[in-house]
Image (cartoon, rainbow, N blue to C red; front, side, top):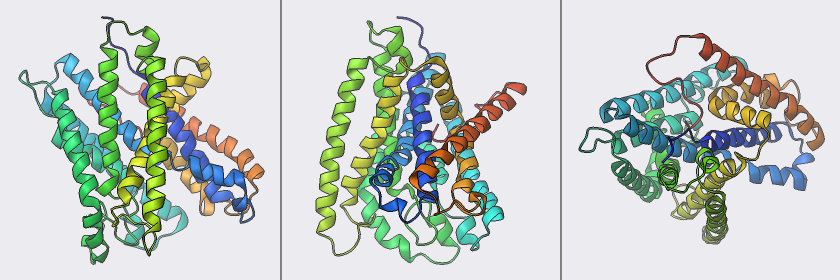
Amino acid sequence: MAKPTRIEGVDLARGLASLLMLQGHAFGGWASADARSTAAYAFTRVLGTLPLPAFLVLAGASLSLRVGAARRRGEDAATVRLRVVKRGLVVMAAGYLTSFVYALIDGSDGLGTLLRSDVLHVIGLSLVAFAVVGVRPGNDGAPDLRRLGYGALFLGALLTLLAPTLNQFTPATGGPLRYVVALFGDVPGVARMPLFPLGAWMAMGVGLGLWLLRAQRAPSVSDEARRAGAERRTLLLASLAALVVVAVASFLTTALAARLDHPLSRADSAVWANLLDLGARGALVLFAGALLTPWLPGRVRQSLLLLGRYSLWAYVFHVPFCYGRLAFGAHGALSMTQAFLLLIPLTLASLGVAWLRRRLAQSRPRPSAPRAPALGH
């Protein structure tokens, strides 16, 4: 079998997720009241459902690929686990630092703004949890992929099944403790994206990453498929299956939510269908990235790979320009056409930040530990 290569499809999918994130925040921040009544704006909201689950799914897939590479190199499982935990803690710290910087730009409502739980927090905390539970040694001391799969299955089920019960109690949390509890469950004014149940999307990603690793071991796999992640026919069938899951789970979410006498929340068991729906959408982004990898022109592919590998930096950079003072009067004031035209330089500027971050990384001596992570990687 040929020497394993880096699966570009995962990085490219993260670049796609970053583009979806940029358009979601841009149109969500800039569109006027009239623009929000258009079909075009409604379509951007559908696309806006993809990035969050995609980043967590891709983080899980990347974890599987990282563990698979460590096993091939014979790395010690405890060392790999520690590095992934550190990576997760760096992402969490970046979340708190980002909130602090945004508060300096736009002002703050106090600790509720600075210590709120957001996307970076749930990605980082999920990495820590899945590393602790799933990165375990086999008989040779290297990470065991089967134990990673079993650990992800256990954690995914736990985060999903306990979420409604946990989120019935967490909203009542008061005092300083609420800033810690907000990492795990809903706390009004503090928690936006808690581990229960959003971390379950990482479990889906771990499973998909293990599936990609298995596809790489097929004796007849082509070089193109190695770079993309799997053979095109396999990816197309997987995409079709994900679309069916989206359709069924979306229907179930709507039907179950209609029985409630209040808006759907994470304290309702109907959230399970919603979790499956959005998780399948995140998987679609992964499959799309893998399918596009062999076909995109070189410069476009390299740009998306760059954006994907440094998506954390693009995220931190672009958000203030969509909301608050740095929107410079565009917030809630633009037509869809105007917002689209402004989205182009915002995207190019975010790509420029990623390019600068890469140049900075290349100018420094290569560290012994992995570089600062991408968003969800």
